[in-house]
Image (tube, rainbow, N blue to C red; front, side, top):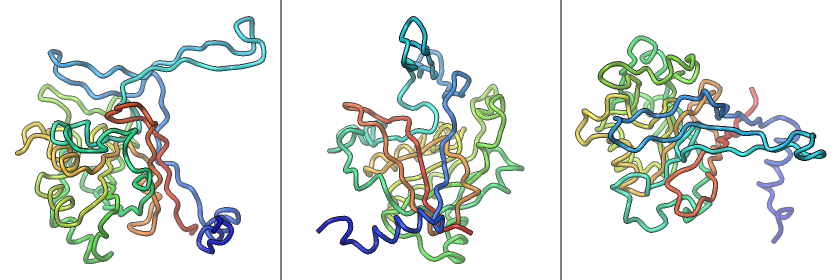
Length: 263
């Protein structure tokens, strides 16, 4: 059987061609000013994004333009593999080069917490919020991404990390909510518009950083620094989130895309 024999593939291709389906870019642009996660100074830092021109149609290379780039794996819009966290350290296929590519394309459920995050930087998604969403949209299907919309990606760079003396103040899921999504709903992964899948103050939670702990301990994935979640419907989007195939990589920057019906 070839791709031409599959009516579903042909229908999707036709719908993309005539714009009945559209692509929404969920990726923030990487540049040297992109904020990176800030850890206590005694811990190893994550390198920011750096770009260095090699040649641009000049004496260094008359017919070509290219750059050297460097960054930490968890920079910009990026993918967290299970091996990123200690709870997933011993899991098979826990690094980005070993993950089944079938898991890079899956449906997405978008839970809107933007109104709450606008008035409370420490807003936490709770089980009650998930149940309210499900009452309107149906149960979250197993194997789906859950994306937490906060419109945090619309903030200016200087307000994005929202650092104070006691650390970052950014929204995220409560420990109970992320455990519910992983254990009761069987989600594939969780995505956020902030630098991490956890809330900024999640070092004070039990367990600390519960999104990382529960997701990666169960072999699930995380997406951070997403944008344009306001352009996605609550259900009906297909998310494409394929990290770079880095040997033994704990994560990777990526181009996250969603396929959605045109309106």
